[in-house]
Image (cartoon, rainbow, N blue to C red; front, side):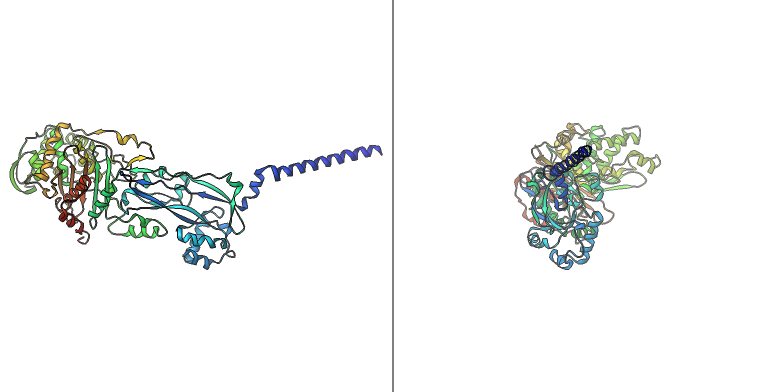
Length: 605
């Protein structure tokens, strides 16, 4: 009997020990260990991603050009929504969408994930969101996520600033920063400096009731993280000059690029036609983008960076420099012009109505085709073969940034066209010379440049042989810009050969026979060159490049007007007005300004 009592006590002791262990473990789970509590509460916690405030953008004079305004995205968690939980028609009326849109948006969200939140309706403004937030508790599965929307106070510089676009699935996989519905820079500064502007997201964990109503922060915000605002950028542009240039370019197709020669900083970059940057904001962004993309005049196309055009007679300046550098001509060399250049088999490349013996400076002043064709031919004759001559010529041009994207801080652009000698070998079966490609002497033929390349070429002329890579950002929240933008780059032409070219450019505006005397300013010496590029599809293109003042230049500019005719008709006066506006902040020739502003070339197309 005693033996059984001992066994009973042992068994009872074991059960008691086990019970104590379970009680202690239960106490640990329910009271001490937060992990279990955290896990158990998952079904009543909401993880609100805190979007970072996007960085601001200023112009070179500290004028705010890109700001932020508060807005909201309506978010959905599909698993919390069933047909029985909400009045669909009432909800659609509240957020101003159709039932069809509701179904489409729900299906997209559910296809993405039934358990993760995604954007149901984007960019609800502050006024609408206030009304919505008061009634949203009636619709479980939905909540508002605060964000900021871009705002453009000046309504200009669209192509330069760029716009935001919704990220695609590929981007969300490549960069874990982004989730479905996020916006990122799609063009311009917004895209090129996305990683600086976007900042860092934060996270707020909230307790919500069964009606999805906010019940406060979980654990008093112990697990929350703060969003970090994007960096403030200071751009190189002068927003007043930009706005003025866009005003001059209204109802015209083309581009203007202005650069500060001593730094490579872009002062203005205009592509026309343009559009108000605010139309690609808000709920109608997609609809407005579609309308712009279908516009026949292609307002979304950045002609300043992506438009490729023959440079016309502006290119004679570079051919003159190369001929001087290679000893094919001297600054005093003369050629006789009898109305054109004869290049065999009764072929003739025409010239302007003049018959005279011209030196280099005079030839630039009146833009004589004959002179530069002869100089081009002389240059080729100084080599043993056309291939060697062309390859050397091409190297010289490459040093001016021709045929190269130039590694600036835009994500898109084109290198233009500067064919290899192999192109002509194949085209002419190895039998060709200077006369075969004589149109290259006057900036025609296969040669194509972008307006930003033309402006950079002009900056090199202004600096007499060097340039800085054209760039659009001056400062990133106190940081230095990319060091490659502050590195001086030299072209292959010696400084001494620039003087006769620049003297000719001065006479283009100030000389008695200059081709752009209508661009003359009383108090500023402008050095420029007109160009008229042949266009097989209509009126010729009007071109003008210039820098000013002659000594210590502050601005180098290229203007390209599609179907504008002579370079002196539209491009030259536009450049002159831009230069005067930038350098002395006033316009003296009001009649010319009025003529340009009222000029409508779009209706003539």
